[in-house]
Image 1 (cartoon, helix red, strand yellow):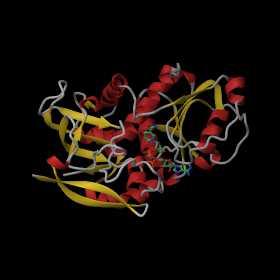
Image 2: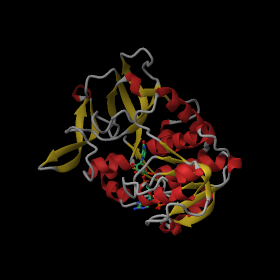
Image 3: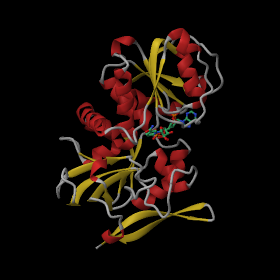
Image 4: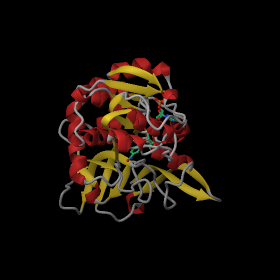
Length: 328
Ligand code: NDP
């Protein structure tokens, strides 16, 4: 039985992406064989497919940092045939063959069971972007932020992480300020629960070490000057959960808001996040979001072949919300 997969190869330092046909015996010898229902196109997948950043550590490689599906075969004690499972990160889609395929062979320790009430389709509408947004919310909570603390800013709000973060914070009762470079997405963000929209240009160039105190907390997927300005604009003892670099990997900030306002910069990594925490994150996602939110978050459902065509648009910041990949 053959199945379809996206395959990345490298020739003369150029990444070549194509659709290919494989059989299960071509897959690496890992413990759990999964029949994938859905995957998704994340920022990192788009970098891998286009070769725009060196996220792929070995070629040839099937990209796809996440997937959801059903166990076909298992040599791992925690998983049996028929179990519905979920994968995010662990270097899959970077150094291990990943989720943009109809099948994957994965280590059992990388998998979690899908929480009750969440379908493969819903899980992958959220994808790693949505799961990371939940980890960011949990980081704010860990540092004592509650809805009573004051407004919470979300940068890159119309993107994958940002849009799910807006929805989650609003459902938890926070007053959400959405920063976006796309004013045409104001209705989308308001429907997700943002109460104020600001132009990302306010934050995207070099600012003062300390600015007016505006937000109790923030979720930032943008980095660079934006994150520096967010730090400078947090209220006394404010917290920012930083997870991304859509504007840049640099952080041209000063220590002023740390030592004069006691702010906290909390880093969030989804790839090697401990299993116990990812289970909590997925459980909470399944409880907090309903079908109307999934409908709003989903921009487009694409095939494996179309995921290759859409990758450049995602990197260009043209995708609103999430891109679901129906691998079948
Ligand atoms: P998207 O492309 O969906 O969203 C990124 C958003 O950032 C865009 O929609 C845009 O929002 C904003 N943006 C893009 N370019 C710029 C720019 N030059 N200046 C300011 N804002 C910009 O990506 P994701 O949401 O999926 O991922 C966002 C970031 O988070 C990426 O860097 C990704 O690598 C990172 N990430 C990190 C994870 C982790 O484990 N730490 C996990 C998942 C993602 P708008 O149009 O609203 O302004």
